[in-house]
Picture 1 (cartoon, one colour):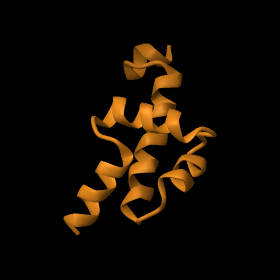
Picture 2 (tube, helix red, strand yellow):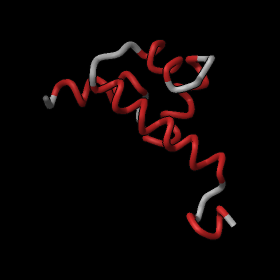
Picture 3 (cartoon, one colour):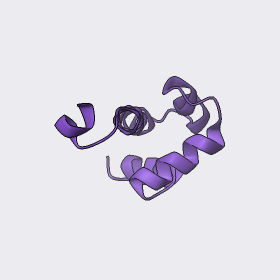
Picture 4 (cartoon, helix red, strand yellow):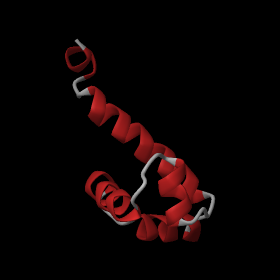
Length: 70
């Protein structure tokens, strides 16, 4: 039912929400490690892999772009 309603699985939805929160935290100059832990990732390498897969750039690249344009 969840997938029929939102077009994505519950796990994918939760993962996307965690990455959205990570983007907010990275924009406030949080460290990559701290952001990973605050969004429920116990492994920063896994966090970086998932972030890059969903956003298209690494967390550090994303952070540098966001902070540069502020």
